[in-house]
Image 1 (cartoon, rainbow, N blue to C red):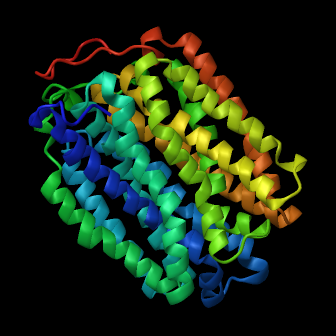
Image 2 (cartoon, one colour; image 1 turned 120 degrees about the vertical axis):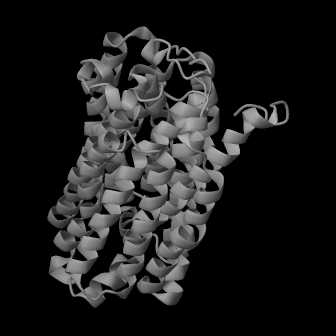
Length: 428
């Protein structure tokens, strides 16, 4: 991140008002996503699907969020092009927070599924707005760092700290209080914060020209041409890796011997690793512009590590492989992929492109992975069998990203051109 002491106030303020606020917002968003993974054991008892129905109903409960998320990312990125992203994110946070609170009152599986679907839809509309903020407020040479702040640290800090914060709350007060607290944070903290701190897109120094989003057709060329499809495939496989592990990790670490508070710590370790590695790798990416190669290695190496899970016997050794794999993947792939996208898509297509990639990749890939791990656990009695399959798939994603690096314009993975402050776009 740029040196805050040497930057004039007007130049450095987006790092705090935009980047810092969105970091906190995504932190709470991921608490709302992960609370169900923590509360499932008692929730399944009260709602009547413990026992033989657990794997099937839990898979639906965990992944219906991603089904709504997939469609809403795509449609939300396209349909909100004419709206100010500040307005969109405030309404999204308010709606999903109310849905989260509603889960705490329910005794019905049907209501649980509806509320989780609403959570997915609103968080899906929310996600591409973050790329619009990054594209509009930060210069191209700052964007890997900016994306780390906006779309990365909140996400992985929530997963690192969230399991450690939510598990003791669940153990002490039960699953209902867990949903009341996480939903209440959105309404009482994030909505007021966004109202006060976020700024309209019209004030942004790198915004697209007025009316461009409304006047330009959304085409494959605008998204980056045919190589965009390779980028999309790589993101599908990473969505499978990330969500296949994240949805099930509290139960997976319990299955290899971690219980009580050690279960919370073990669940959090991969995400702590991601947080620690993110900033140095982001700085290397911004300085070298080798973003495609760094992102591809962020899939290939973790895939190999996941395939090695059957070769180790002890629970701590399995946890170590999962921790290194997820931490390295998340810090190397995640911030870079958004910078690559923001550099190759036309300015007016950044929001829709982010929605398409995250919707199909995270929503679609995550949904498949959630069921895959759940069903393989039902068949084999082990979560590790599903994790191994995810490792093989993510290797294919790394190969796809290397192919993208060969076929896409070289500037997409290596250099970017800053937009002038007037908002007139230069060739991306």
